[in-house]
Amino acid sequence: MAHTPESDPHGFRRRGVLFVLSSPSGAGKSTIARKLLASDPQLEMSVSATTRPMRPGEVDGRDYHFVDLERFRSMVADHAFLEWAHVFDHRYGTPRSQVDAILDSGRDVLFDIDWQGAQQLFQIAGGDVVRVFILPPSMEELHRRLTARATDAEAVIDARMARAAGEVSHWDGYDYVLVNDDVEACYQSVRTILAAERLKRSRQTGLIGFIRSMLKN
Image (cartoon, rainbow, N blue to C red):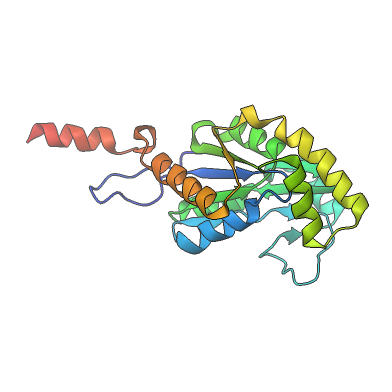
């Protein structure tokens, strides 16, 4: 994926960042993602397609692209997803065309996906992908947060806790791992990571030409 988003003030361009945030449910990933999007106009959220039913207050196309199972399977067969996974009896996938459109518009892409999606995305896009995993302070604190939400039955919370253990076991598949015991501090760390990744030499596609031009003078 060789998209080159916004121009640098010095006249050369850089490759877009595919910025992945993953965490067990309840570890604070969604809160940090919302804060990032609100503070950074150069970042846009990738909206996943899903087969799960729409929940009250959700909007099709904003929260998810809601599709039926037949449509989802058709999209898989057509290679329309950059990544997809089967989670809690439903399917979730990242539409390839949407990501291309965001990068072509000059912005970076934020992904709220699990370790399976992060792995698939990395296999396709390699060095354009930056993977950040957010841990809770402890499994006990994670359970407390899930219970405090008061949105899930105990059986659902138990299933999320069981899945969380499996997700945490894949921590070493990420470039950065943060502990979210203070949401503001964790958010600032995520912002720092994104800023540094944008400045990486490997992303500056016009740097060689810029330096050659400089040395001619």
